[in-house]
Length: 136
Image 1 (cartoon, rainbow, N blue to C red):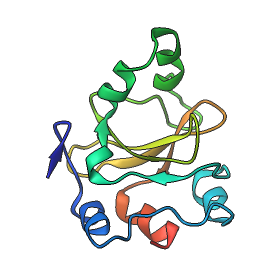
Image 2: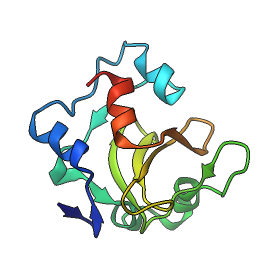
Image 3: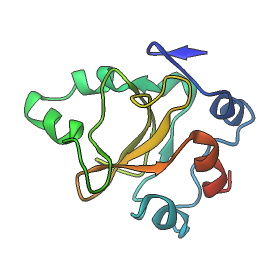
Image 4: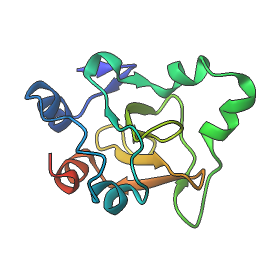
């Protein structure tokens, strides 16, 4: 399956189709362990709402867009997100999205998260690791 021109990994597609791609209880310590932040209102998006970042960023006012794009980082890579090379798959609350990052590889995207420190950080090298770490 292709969404926004990007292939949805089969593990994610299977988790969605089996009804397993759902947010753990927000009181769980899992969010802090996986993302480094607590969840406010976690949402794991259904396929119909997964969109390429270009689309959700285009709807955003110009002055906010820079915050969401980030800056390339050396301390906690990647630091930024490529709007045409990422797929929004969920969020932990307002201004806390997480995406599949296809910049390093079109066939094996990593999972990155816009942390409360305003940096995009890698939280899993691939979707399989994220699913395992979340216990879903």
